[in-house]
Amino acid sequence: MEQPRFLTLPDGSRLAYRHVAGTVPGILFCSGFNSDMQGNKALALDAWCREQGRQFTRFDYYGHGSSSGRVEDGCIGRWRDDTLAVLDRVTSGTQLLVGSSMGGWLMLLVALARPERLCGLVGLAAAPDFTERLAADLTARQRQQLAATGYADLPNCYDDGQPYRIGRHMLEEGAAHLLLEDRIPVHLPVRLIHGQRDEDVPWQLSLALAERLGSDDVELQLVKNGDHRLSEPADLQRLRDTVQRLLAV
Image 1: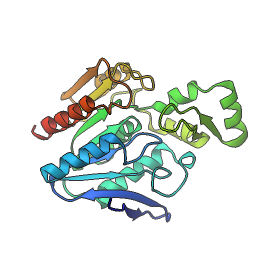
Image 2 (image 1 turned 135 degrees about the vertical axis):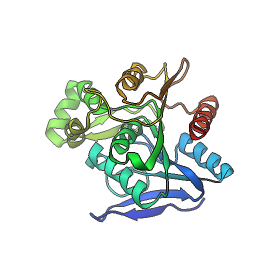
Image 3 (image 1 turned 90 degrees about the horizontal axis):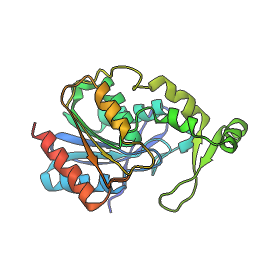
């Protein structure tokens, strides 16, 4: 497998990325919290874009995957800026943003900052404002750990089951980027897909998001047996079909 390339940021940190040249609109994939660009959805889109001869870009946020830093030292604003750096310095031409979970929040923030670069958004179990819900759900023990050390370890039901770490700064800084409290002035075509068996992000959140988006071109697909990851073969085919239809608009 080809090695990732690295984008060096002004503070010296490095973002790992993989870029496939091709026709535009291209696709820029934004992964979820504590995930990386090697997930099934990113790889499925990578393969599809190569078949289509379409530009495709995936990357790791600061503290994620092969990028530098620790995830507990990151925050929503930093990861938004990581996404903007990749959009500005790696991709070319118009892009379709595909955001999974936290990536769905980041794609909205990027759409507000660079609407002229985008042709649409696809959110998979999009999780805007998730830091508010995460903070509210902390146990007493996790709150004590957060107060004493600046971070808290949360159970992880995926992969190897090792706990993952969140930083107090991430929870506090997220308040500066909340979207669901008001109208969201994004006027691009948006497609949202959410599993109704999602135990991490309630599917009703995508309903609330659809209502708050300024765009009139918003569609929501609810998957009755879909979980948070939406990475089963049928889910990946649904993603490809949704992207293909949106690019044809």
